[in-house]
Picture 1: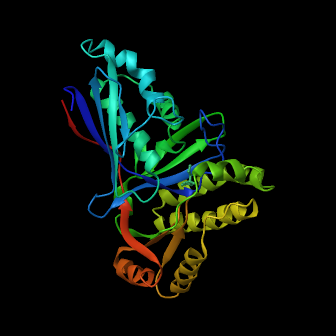
Picture 2: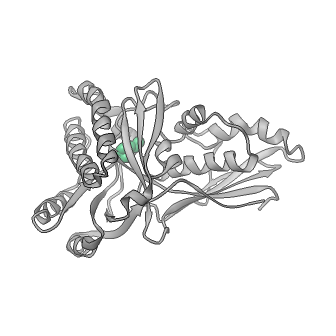
Picture 3: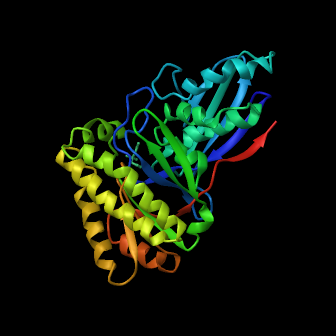
Length: 321
Ligand code: MEV
């Protein structure tokens, strides 16, 4: 590793009010208001780890592979914007480089990757960045970067032209809950398949219109500590989102995932739960901590791997010199 560097861990995310539709392929501003949580494993063992360092040769490595600076959504989109300011302070170097690695991430890694790069830029150079613009910069890497930047439960107010994330609750507010992530082995579809198709649904405009009102309801639930209500809103939104997606020809929920969902619904008679499906082949089932094993045992009867998750916080700076 070159001399001057910072190492950051950031946490991946799951939608609660799911994001479908972005402004365009460059800015990637969400077309409507959304909400989500950052997550990690019970031992904090799920994250994206990123090192940003100064060098004399430009290099960007994600999960062991060199990324081209020109590829869309490349972290260099953001690094290059701040490169000059950074290097002015360290004239002995000519480039800003990075290495990023996913550790056990189930889905939502690009949010964590974007937030990790952002935290590196902010922390190593103590550069006074306008946080509102900075979130929009990071959205070019991942449309829902704000969820990971702030951690906990966040609401991103957006309309395809402007976008701003509000921190609503911290991870401590979710202590009594565990999310059992049931990972299925099928490959996921790229999120852009979702974004480019859902906007063609006849009810999309209504979904956009309702999103701000739904976010207000979530805020009220957060104010009154109604965590179950928040997850239940996620389940309701999952149902709307995936039925709209199916109707425009994008099917994320496989038959086996659907069978698990039916089991989860049956289990509601025994213990409280709420499920969420985002863009990947995973069913995230929120339960009270005391029922996590029951849920895991039920999931083991399906062709999936259950993993316990908890709500995570903001990115952490691990080391810096
Ligand atoms: C990706 O931009 C958004 C989805 O993961 C849904 C969500 O988490 O809100 C597909």
